[in-house]
Image (cartoon, rainbow, N blue to C red):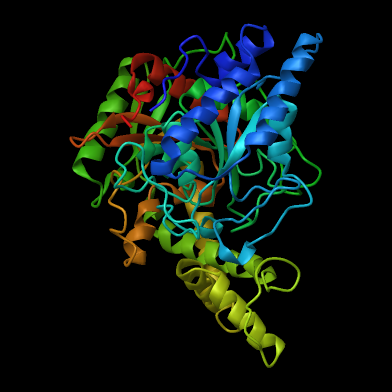
Length: 491
């Protein structure tokens, strides 16, 4: 493994400050990142493409602008990896699927535009479960990504490539998407921090849709400070996304922000039920005890509709996916089946059979069944009613507490291939994260310890809509009192 120059800053916040002040060159920071990727990614397989030339050109241009007296943005010179479901002009986007073979986007996602405008250097595309449908980053046409803490284990999903890239310190920031836990769960399993903001807090324009009422643009970093820096860049209304929220964007970690003295943290009984690994529960409760020492008050809660979150999520998400993925037909873009077809329907069938993987086909079929005539009221609309009950659970909880806490994932990272033949077991990995997506509230995962096998465990914090500041402040206090987030995998 190549040695990282110690003189160069490490975190996104440190890099941006140093590059803006002329104390470090963006080109040097980038080269360290590219060297790290070259040394490690052959084993981790976090990236599906690295933009060597484009990234070097951007870094050199940034350094030239700084030398010319230009004021640089808040992410000046920070290398950032992008999940392969964000489109970028003149770059390929595959969403981990063979059906988008050869697709090159004519425009750039709003989130990526904001990163670039802030001075970030986009270094490449990261691996993911196909169309973000999975919890292990094994459902990808590019093959699986490996967990940097144990290369024989999964990194979580669907944003496993981005999580692994940050965990292996290839980049200090990475972009993912969280539909049912696809950023928080891999963050927990890879020992990094991941934030799912309030639905609509960040524009989804240019994020390839999975489930439109659930998809949330979400960043990864090593600590809460870098997440706060990134969120301030990404958040804000976008006229190209009708669901984006027009609300002020605060300084998420303002210097005069209060600590957590008197903060009320809810601990729902339902989130500590059967199925939670004993070691994961132990690390989670230890983390809560640390927050209590820092001044927080723990409040036991009941959120009775939590047990319906997984079936509700997999009805709504698959129904929306079946609608969104209908556009992939081999006509307008992407892969088309090569063998001759007698009619259009036969061509569609062959194209989708060859282009979509087994998990995506499974979810499309389930979603299409839910939306069939005569079944919409029985399945999809009933799921929407239960979604309302889950949201009301959160409303009731937040009338008593400021935050809600739980483990992020019911277990630590499992072995590659262990759950590939058991879809239901795979789906249960999202049991603790899907409620926040269904309710639209923000959620955060931060490292809170390790198992006896040295596998990371994540603490999940959930907050009220648009109150990411309290989440990040609490995470920062926890990370000031612990060093779990500083532990790097030995590669």
